[in-house]
Length: 248
Picture 1 (cartoon, rainbow, N blue to C red):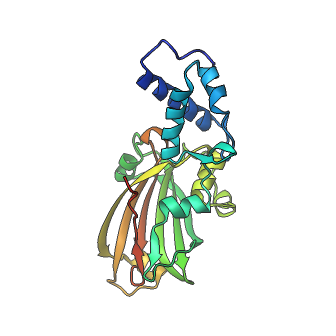
Picture 2 (tube, rainbow, N blue to C red; picture 1 turned 120 degrees about the vertical axis):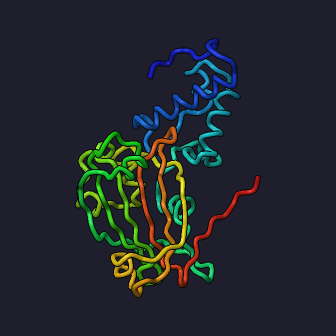
Picture 3 (cartoon, one colour; picture 1 turned 180 degrees about the vertical axis):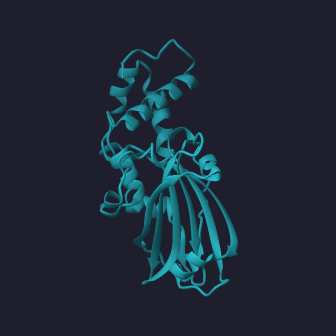
């Protein structure tokens, strides 16, 4: 990325957005890898020819977006999609007694086919492009609780195979980030109660016609671009979906 000056091209509010955009581009390109440290604010201000305050505002927003992480006395780092991040931001299934644990994940199916019109709309695809379909069963306290149906665009994850997916060392989102440069920064979710279909009922050990919670999630990468469409079917007999609102 050229280190050309940003100053003089726009007002301060627009300047910090340009700095933010350039920092995101560096993260997306892998120039600053997951877990890697950003240059300090003085270096960034010099590179972009802007004030430290302008850089700080851009960095503050990226920290608020959980893209960057500040570590006191160490610096600012690109956030990794590790287990801690997954549990804090994306996994909200909690035991009725308040207990939280990282789920055991078992791959049930991995296939490649064409997107349905609905999936194409959720993933912002043109036409029925190829997608990977991944079915996982998540267990808590030793029993299956969640059936995940995941759909991702094949063009966004070139070279993904069942073996690569199964042999990942971290979370699914960590695989997206480290192997394919796709960082999930947020998600849109919709929930409703429904009756478990035959496949989910069997995988979760539920009787036919059992009520379940259906969570539909579109995971988003930078610029609100969809990275994944996921439908989670949850057995809520002993578990709740818990979302904690942050204080203003």
